Amino acid sequence: MSLSELLSALEHARARTEGLLAPLADAQLTQSVSALQSPLVWDLAHIAYYEELWLLRRVGGRAAMLPELDELYDSFAHGRPQRAELPLLTPQETRAYMGEVRGSVLDLLPQLALDGDDPLLHGGFVVGLVVQHELQHAETMAQTLALAGWISPELPTVEAEGDVLVGAGPFMLGSSQAWAYDNERPAHVVELAPFRIDRALVTNAEYAAFAGDGALASAAPTQPVEHVSFHDAEAYARWAGKRLPTEAEWEKAAKTVGDELEHASGAVWQWTSTRFDGYPGFHAFPYAEYSSPFFGNGYRVLRGGSWFTDPLVARTTFRNWDLPQRRQIFSGIRCASDV
Image 1 (cartoon, helix red, strand yellow):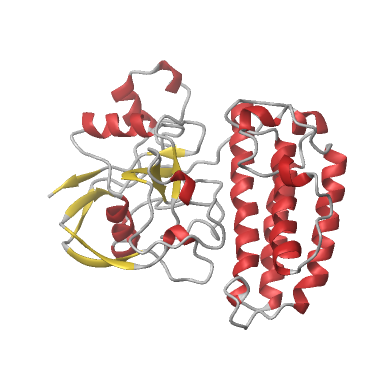
Image 2: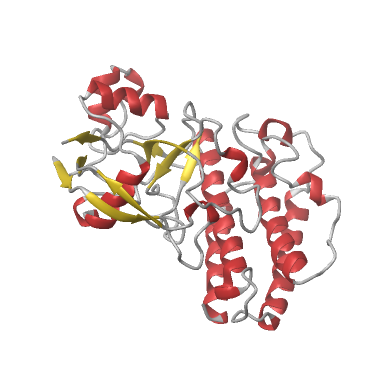
């Protein structure tokens, strides 16, 4: 990507973050809404810390602006339930830090050799890493806002009916695109049996018929059901005489009959039956902490993208994952069945 495109991507991600949080008071930024989520001010400073770490320190070779932030904003140093008790930067300090980091990044980028052999720089990969990280944290913050009742989902109407046949045969699973994450690589051929996949997402009305849950009484009946766990989704599919698609089935359907799948992205993340793990030949890059710690620990893969997911993230090969009991994410259901 050109320098101007990279700068535009950085600006786009920051505009989404700022637009999401603009209506909030500082007290809301520091409030602990749920043990499942960080205070918003932690996420905000973490975004800037990550940008400093990768663009200014790792690539630019600069010293840390505030060395004490290495522990405060390292995702693995403190779990989400503990972050509200840390001596975090205040909202005002966080904004100043974000501005200082971004100013230095804008000065640095024109000096980088983006067409060289360094895999961090080639194709602007490290900038894409920072951009996608901010966009993903913006969605995490949107989940926090939703839990607090400070934001309402912008869900579409489900109109499609029936299912579509996906024929047997090989297809290429994964990606070799410039900004693809390590867990999307390497792209490799997978052979699948034929299967059917629903054109539509499961609606609130359909899910209520299964759950008999009065909590859905006020939900729009023709909108996709949201905030369901993997266990919920699996139980619904079984009740409906179907099953969840595997991750490979979901991606093959998206790549081959995607035009027939309503809301393949842009509504709710869709649970698959696949446990999160590396593809054959997986190689952690550029840092092992992004994917590897979650392999083999019961996490399930979600595909597609929610009503908040940015298109830069919601690509066909993007792999989201969470624990099977989690419901705070913008997750829903698309069923599949054997032929």
